[in-house]
Image 1: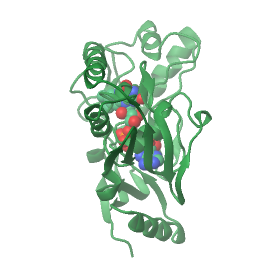
Image 2: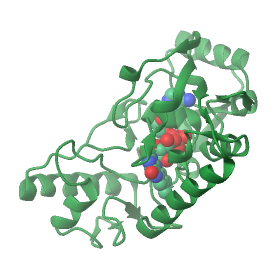
Image 3: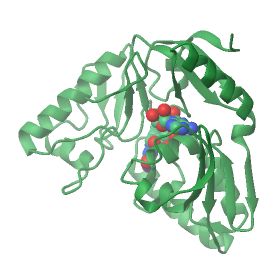
Length: 288
Ligand SMILES: Cc1cc2nc3c(=O)[nH]c(=O)nc-3n(C[C@H](O)[C@H](O)[C@H](O)COP(=O)(O)OP(=O)(O)OC[C@H]3O[C@@H](n4cnc5c(N)ncnc54)[C@H](O)[C@@H]3O)c2cc1C
């Protein structure tokens, strides 16, 4: 048997605060425990996923018939040697950005203000207009594979390493701490001016289409900014942010996403793709 919690409310572990219960929920604090749980799940045909800080996911109202792994303990360690920052996949982005800055290392400022863990960021290739995390990753450690070199081709727009990520090494550049601080202040101001604050969101719901205006502008042009659809508010500050209202369910959220997507296509002929990861009950990605 594995040391896991049972019937845990996934809503408590996501920024949208939506979704039902997971059958199993395990805090995994070291490699041995990780291997043991994976082996148990595979032997017993139990599906499993890693959940980071839950800032880009939506679970079904029916929850998850499987096991959620939450990296803790040694998977949250961060160390710095020369211009290399090594982080466990469960470390918070904010901590890694802070440690790089303190050590006068430039290259991860673009990640300032993005909630989440390093594993989630490298899986999503998270970033901003200042750059993406993938540009700074040198090596990753994944399930069953010790640290290996990555290539640029492994990262695309909001698509990074697909395996279960356990650790990441970043290669950064020596710089002046003041210069790093200035870039961070610029990014901070940009984020404060542009994005809704203190709301229940998962950041941008849709990816920006490759050739065209940003998704938020398209949603706005289609007339959805500030509207309420199925118990979900389309933010009046940034139309690509969707905020569930009281009593909203995960199914309402999915319906609102589908309705906006369909309408943007009908009115503007752009086919939006979701950026958030929507999980079905079996732990598989669902595409709206
Ligand atoms: C207010 C707000 C602002 C945001 N702004 C931005 C932004 O500017 N830019 C941007 O890119 N994103 C942004 N996001 C989205 C989100 O913060 C990022 O995608 C972040 O990288 C997700 O990390 P997480 O740990 O929360 O991942 P989760 O949401 O927990 O998971 C996301 C996906 O990654 C997978 N995953 C998590 N950990 C691992 C792992 N160790 N190995 C393999 N897969 C893993 C999960 O299974 C899931 O499929 C924002 C979100 C919010 C709420």
